[in-house]
Length: 413
Image (tube, rainbow, N blue to C red):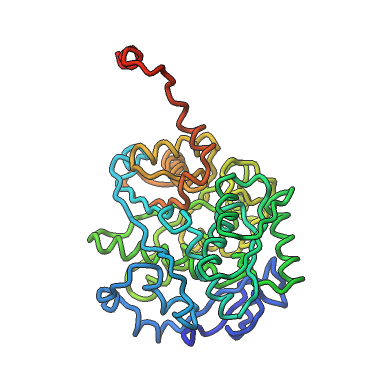
């Protein structure tokens, strides 16, 4: 933790001591005063560099401890987080129309989503603060992830989700023993209620948009991606594609890539393609129009990115502008098609939000944003078993037959 220099407000630039209890800049408020964890990179470079990492035999996100705000390694949960597989997918590349395609399957984390990287760190920080309870609001994945890691730490958890969250995700919450409030409203309403409750009862707030430590967990996906690509003896891909909801994930992806440039692993940050659903595209609208955030209604089957009022707007927009990338929106129909495409051409089963990035790549190629001679890495952020209804909608129904070989012959022939 002594490698963390300060917490800096992305809005006004004011810096705070990293040991302060405030999760956002008091002067700017939680809507604008998002904090960024600032490290002493000169000191870190002596501990974490291309030479030292070749000797590291820790294959989880904790191989990046020098770049994480963890005070005591003894608080790290026992669950295996990170070092998820990276696949080369030539058949998928051909279908998407790019030269080379990699798929990083984040559905292989303990609760089957990318959010485990953030929740593991959130629980550690709650333990450091000796919190009696931890809370968050979520469309589903962050909630089930927090429930799992809270169970691992035996830390009580209270979670707010919109009542429309997929049944599988709510089942995860309950089986892990979390207290679950299914809010009869939108995700944004559930988020505001969580903020009020955490302030009222003094619960530790895991909400990624207002807790700067959570993005630090998310950035580890980029640190891993860089190491895995280099281990293959390949150049970094031209583009990294990721689905975008509240802006925290894409913000973390950028920060991790920036750090790997700063620490000498790669020479430049790849362009980032941020992908939203057409029924909920506040980032796309702001980026295209070079305009401030305009919240919108969320109308998409991709529940994990159904965020009409993204709370980490600044970092989410900076990730694209500072990487010279692009934002793009895709339809729900394109998302469902991408579920089948990824499963059949790369054998990776992703939920709707998890595969939205692949749908975005395909559209970006058709629109000329991505050149056909460029390479792409796609982050699949959640497992398809998280949302079976959408999977059935994408894949279609089985053929029902009587228990007869003749019936099989009739279909086969």
